[in-house]
Length: 144
Ligand code: RB5
Image 1 (cartoon, rainbow, N blue to C red):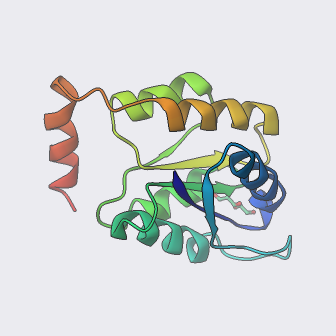
Image 2: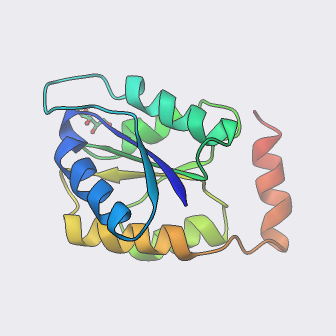
């Protein structure tokens, strides 16, 4: 799968670790920065990842900041993106099954690398459930 990734300074270390984790699994990662732990603004990195997903350049997006909250708020401004801020593997599965999330935003400061790996496993392996959820997602997308 082609996955677009980005972070700010607070998510940089885990973005690098999670990128390696995904590449080891055979995924192709488009790394949209940042490239160091120097302080930056998270919307500058949410935007290119969201645009990759919206344009179909990447099937999924992964964003990491301190909490994941700012990245979700920014990415969800881009039409076609359904970004969810996730801190447990169970919610990662549910954001796919119920919400067809195509971007996940993670916390680099409050969630361990090991848990974020489990979250990504669930996010990447869970299919959208469709059915009763499909019309709800269509209603979300009609807000774009
Ligand atoms: C940066 O200090 C922090 O605000 C950012 O990484 C993120 O947590 C925002 O939501």
